[in-house]
Length: 150
Image 1 (tube, rainbow, N blue to C red):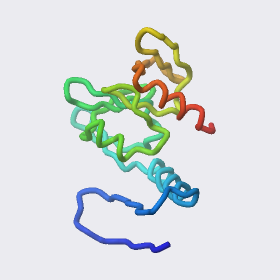
Image 2 (spheres, rainbow, N blue to C red; image 1 turned 90 degrees about the horizontal axis):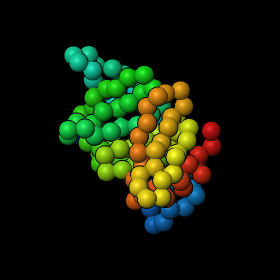
Image 3 (cartoon, rainbow, N blue to C red; image 1 turned 60 degrees about the vertical axis):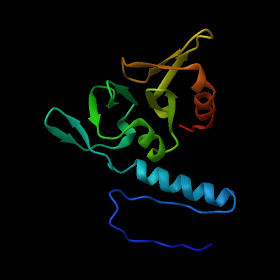
Image 4 (cartoon, rainbow, N blue to C red; image 1 turned 90 degrees about the vertical axis):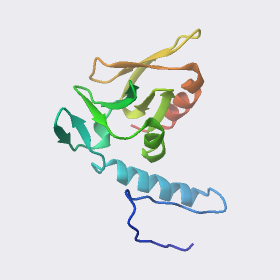
């Protein structure tokens, strides 16, 4: 295995792993990098005229409303400059897309009220906030929840 680091003037740091196949070792390296990145307050969040810096682990979910993406914690809501598709590519694997307009942190999920005909309702630990998971994304969410080890 070769290791190469390139210093560039890019806007944001990016780690790219090139491999012939996804081996257990490569998956372990990817998970270690994602876990390390999740513990760092790498994102800036905004509320009114203030900037906030806190770990991603505090976030329950991200949600789009009127073309603005908001990060929801148990007690508050903050604006972010990223789009959902950008977040989906950079967040650790404990974050999963649950609808066209939302990404949740599976660590904070308390329950899912399943509705076969339409969207199912997600409730979070220690918060009154709730969000819906669409039928299209439900299977992936269940898979991620079964993989989590709290």
